Image (cartoon, rainbow, N blue to C red; front, side):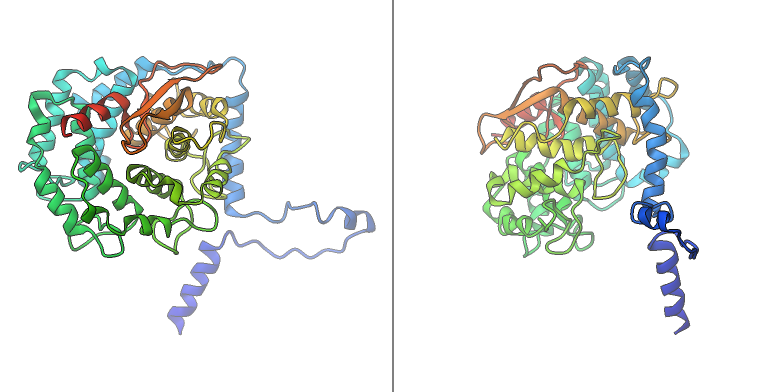
Length: 417
């Protein structure tokens, strides 16, 4: 009983918002007229946190002397340092995410300028990937660890960016990867993240289909029940949760579901109008950037998770004006970079990191191009043209389905056809 009481107190005091004292006072007749509009005594943690974010963002967005320009050379210095400097000790927490770090750094460099990802970089990336998994896949997050579908996704994307250096693409064991993907496939159409253990949600589905698509190993057995699984993940809000009929809509899960449906060629199987409505409401008027869930804070990474979802919809003919491209670009260039600290960040007050650098850059590329597709059965056939009346940061365009530049996605797909 005592344990349950303590749990109730924890939930009530910590999880349901800040505990505020009860205020009792008599109102005059004039005050009674204003009481409905007075919300000063009703403060949730989310409201307080967002007010702090607005205090940080609005001066940057309104500063007439601040130029909305990407500091490309500063970013290059930050990213190339990863190849020569020892990473800080706090990054030990990402020991099981080593392929992800490689992907974030390589993808960011390639977006900025393909020549900045040099042949020496590519050879070192390829060597690192195959040290982690010498048999050519499936790939783990680090040496001696279990193969993981997210790590394999990041490894394949990294090798794709290496542009078949030293014939590295032919070192990938496609048969072993397909057999392993089938071993983590679930009867309901989902995929576990690892064999016998791990989560089962839309992230696993997307990673599995992205890997299989680029390597040309998609089979009917691999995709059985996947469409039904994904359809069941769209909830009443219009976005997608992680699991069928269970979760709140989330920008990351929504991207994974929509990109997976695009790979399957089945985007028309979901409620597109509700999805568009959900995506559009994730952009804030004040901060100008995207949040990832209803009533949550803006975060630069959702420039891609939500912005990329919208780019996929645009490519497949579902609308061009779902969000304000100029406003998102302003948030990225004014609030996600700092002239005193290289790299891109979540929001003002946060430190930059490789993850946010990659996805904020990807989101910036989304704002500057219009998307179309040549063949809806081939997700690598995305094409773009520069968007009119918007700034240009000289970024290589990204295929929003795979999260890598359009040209390299097409090359590896053609290699394995």
